Image (cartoon, rainbow, N blue to C red):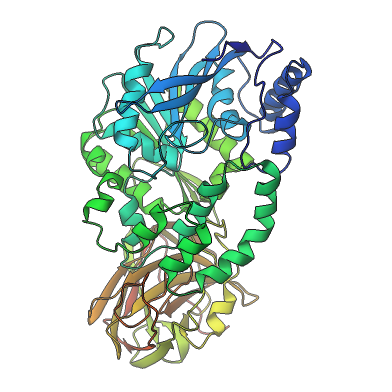
Length: 574
């Protein structure tokens, strides 16, 4: 264990910590880590206070001391490394953050330092096989047992305050659910931001494999390289990754792309049966049945894990657990950005101080923030029917067809992807021959949709191996459309497909149009259906699928409408 270092002393953070960062982070980290230079502590304090001022965070309560590279023993003999932040003065409580992304400035600033200067003792732990921790990193495999061992060690330390709260985003949310599989008696609350509890469901729940695992695996495999290499990769990797995602078989192509540095990718990309033992350690739904402490959940409408965040809220609330929820207009990566992370930090501090007034707070696109006592709010259903000529409105009759060709798959345009696309102009999708487009007349009054829309499609295909992608978009007066929500399903021979879309909160202004898009893929968000029935990660052959949609009462879009004044009217002309 290294000696204690105070931010007012000259020896804090003596070594440059390698790994990825954004913007000027690596340069700042190098400056403040110069050995034996008191200037480093001055800069560090300046950064802490500048961030507080620029992001309008609550004021500091005092300084802190940091201990680096504490040895945390695991039951199998592996040692994890941790950094401990101790405030000067009586601590308000203990916070635990545990995950694979390191303990350098870009992690310590939002997870540890921001709380330490506000009176909390914080333990920041690196997962096994990452940033000096022993063992081999296998994502989500050891988090239940390792998390329990971290808590066992932490609660035996002289600085422990008697109880603790967990905090963290994404993977650091998953590690919180891992602890709650068998809740420690000292754990008094959890703040889970975009944290999944079931990685198997995320990867294969639609029946099609989500290819975001490949990009994430690449990031994890190289995150401890020098900052110069990391910045270089930010500019060179996107083009190479796009090329790899179009190669077949995708499991082997991804393995070559990773150069053997993330063996877990190929294993998970070839296992569509989520009930197999390989997925067991990644499925933590039992935590939702055992948690009885207060939980604060945060997510984004365009986050990868929104469905699981909302499931967590509903299941905990049904059991009477004290649970609060915030959902903002964010993608997954935006919740790591400075502006949004500041909002998250403020709400977390309020939750820790017991000042949270609303059970649910969510952002309505086109209207702003809203408070509610529960989710989803009461709504009445309104049906929209695809009709001949690309019309969306009253019931129409007829048939429409399109052909999905896996050799030229329908592309992903915006949506809840890992590359932070979120809401964008998706007009290009409507111009493709492999997409059916149905657009309403302009609305004569505001339409508020809050909840989970459902698409019902009377469908058949000349190829039983087919997928359906459904999207709801908003079309402006200029003819451009922007995505609102979507759903995806690998079909299993259904005549009438019921496909829930992702939950949303959106107010369509008067004059806007609704647009329904129907396609057979969204690649590379989802691995394309090769049309042969082969394992999608090992197959090479491809066969197109021609889809036929029967228009009528069985094909509709069911929207949860929440504004009481909505009459269901649209204009009859542009």
